[in-house]
Amino acid sequence: MNKKKPVERQKKDESNSAPEPRGKDLSATATRPRVEIKKVDAPELEPLPTEEIWDVYRKARKAKNEVEIEKLRNVLMERHYPLVRYIAERLLQTLPKSIELDDLVSAGLFGLMDAIRGFDPDRNIKFKTYCTTRIRGSILDQLRSQDWVPRLVRLKAGRIDKTLQRLTGEFGREPTHAELAAALEMDHTELTNEMNSASAKTMFSLSEKWEDRDDDSSIEKVDILEDRRAIDPIGELHRRDMMDFITRSLTHKERFIITQYYQVGHTMREIGEMLELTESRVCQIHSNVMSRLKGLLGQKSGTLLM
Image (cartoon, rainbow, N blue to C red; front, side):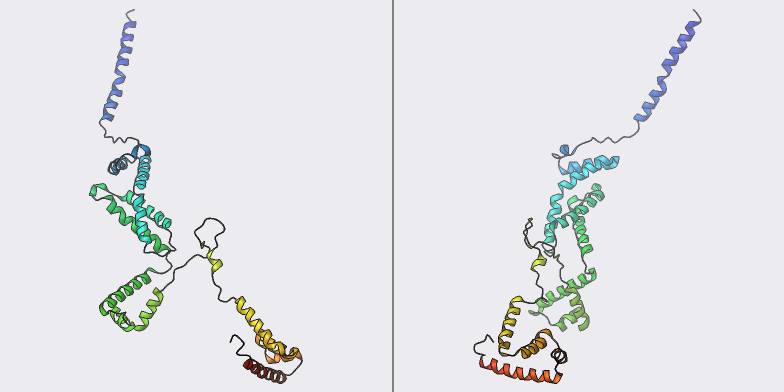
């Protein structure tokens, strides 16, 4: 009986002394600094002002909580989306009609995203002032990347245009080429080359719809483009009718010579080989026919549309 009691006391002492190192660990971890970020969803952020969302976003960046940073960044982009669209609409007024507003807005959103990532609220600068420059710069960079005219040419063209407007205001008239060249300190040939390079035309897609409709009935621009090399059908009909009227009184051989020479484009030698005649004989027949036709047209000049 006496031998069992010390064993029981030893077990109790071990059980009482076991939690002591655990208690020391908890006290050590309690003194470590912690940054606690309350997890919030997008619906919970909607009623909050933008300034408070920026405070939460700053705390999330210090805690390096990537999940919450992504959620807060999306909310901030939605809050500033109207600003991106406003800047894009202002720039669109100075651009050609071939530029789409959605393309400018898409480029501006990339600038807004970079502005949110690089914004430092501790500098006491308003985010609207900071992001406006970034959004505008992102849109202009996108336009320059798609421009097929070099940027140096655009700068020279702007310099020429500003000088032209200044001289027009000073002289009260449009300046001459020599006066413009003297103001720009350029010679005549250099100014001419710069003006020709700056007069680049805007490029359009021929596959675009002519009418702003989504259905398949709207025609494309290529369908209404004029082909200057094509033959005018109405003019061709008038020419054939006039040729038939003029050659109606000619013989078969004379009509063949006139048709092959003026319509087909064969030479006198080729026509003579087809008719088994000499070149001089073909020229003689041609001269006789032309003299007869001139007299015929002189008599009927008042009745023809000539």
